[in-house]
Image (cartoon, rainbow, N blue to C red):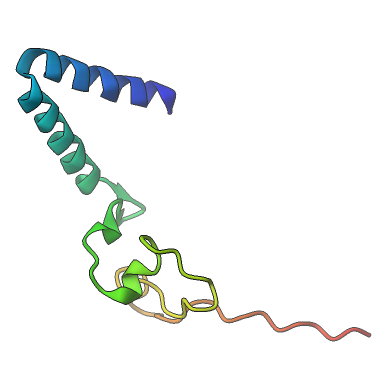
Length: 93
């Protein structure tokens, strides 16, 4: 993790040293494009960055309590939109 951060910082430093503010802006745009192109288990890494529906925003931007989030995000829950039901408590014997 630290190694990747050092590489990104050095890249920004070199771009800024040669191109100034334009280099820094190009670096940020390049990093953003790279993050948007990444996928994890077939799901886009930055999936909910462009989500404008309140149902999808509850999972990332504003963390809603578990008891409010009843439905899964649309891309993940195509076949089964309902999240896991609450487990039934076992009776004491």
